[in-house]
Image 1 (cartoon, rainbow, N blue to C red):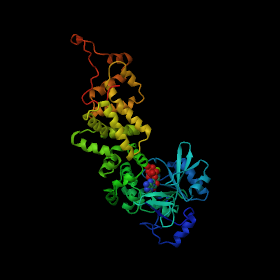
Image 2 (cartoon, rainbow, N blue to C red; image 1 turned 180 degrees about the vertical axis):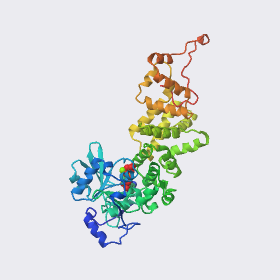
Image 3 (cartoon, helix red, strand yellow; image 1 turned 120 degrees about the vertical axis):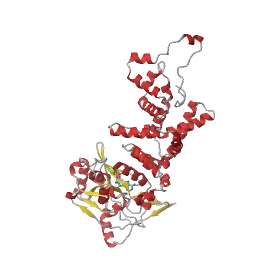
Image 4 (cartoon, rainbow, N blue to C red; image 1 turned 135 degrees about the horizontal axis):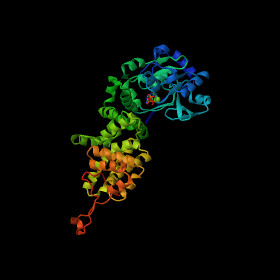
Length: 471
Ligand code: ATP
Ligand code: MG
């Protein structure tokens, strides 16, 4: 059942909101005052310079200001600029509602249902412009909670003093004002910034219930910024992981990508497991890890995460499908072995296991079709690496996923799941010239002993071979 928290119908008019606040100065939101104290850090008191801000973001801020609206940078960009890091993107917040923003910019689109936002497009760069969110009260259906307290929609507009309570962490709630280049801090974000603390605004349990994805954001920011999680926030996180299972799988997929594709995947993995969050995102992987930990010392998944972080540190790209292939390989292999024990041939066992595991995983984190297809390709290439005689190796080299498949083979070889000699052979083969390649793929000459007439197979798989038959 859905509870609808209603609000007065003046959210789109910040000026009326302002008067409402004066009249009702003691009105309280769920657990915080409507009018918090603000500390203003003037330009000389912080290190943010306009030269570090994207030109397009500045254009948006100035234009809104010129049209008589308030305009601030907020969120990750302010946090990152204060840390001397390059922001991933620039988020603007204003008292103009999305329609008003659209009227100011021709290159603007309104997106979102849960949160309506304006996107201002400048070629490839998109500046996200949000309207100040309003505080909750009882008379408006623009804010919707479900019966677990999760926010399903939040399109009530307000003023900056209300918007601040809608943000997640204090360090994400600092507002850079284009009017005088000051930073407004309503929740002690500057102090937390200095001590490197990730603190939720308001009561942690309520805030996690409102949006359980904040737990994943806590992990992401903790590892990305090297911040410690505030104890109250930590306490609320322990035991709250199951709340995540109510989040749409597509949103969880997006969050998983943000957690694992930006250079701190291994730490994120460890912290997610520490808080019991990983098992909600990847239940099959968690089960296979528990089994592995007793036996196998060098997990393929750990190695994949390490490699992925190293690649990013070296400025190389990483792909989502490769990482998902690594996450799900152990569950697929284990399930395939069970199926083989019941009599299914190896090739079919692996195919069936891949189907089952992918279908189950897609219920937790969506798996777009192009991702699941690419994962299957990487997996199905593994047995093909065993065929080293004749024309098959040269054909395999031209396979569009050869590189990913080969990298996966190396991972398996490094973690005991394939013969090291096989991986080395493929490394030599790729680097060899044509003549050498031909020599490498010739069948060994027949010896006198083998004249018996029985055809010998040169394609014998090692005992720990990956999967399926050689195609
Ligand atoms: P990143 O560097 O990943 O962009 P960010 O903090 O900017 O980090 P965004 O997802 O871009 O993250 O969100 C921008 C801002 O919006 C946040 O800093 C925060 O103030 C607010 N915000 C985003 N998601 C939530 C959420 N789930 N709950 C509350 N506030 C949020
Ligand atoms: Mg951002």
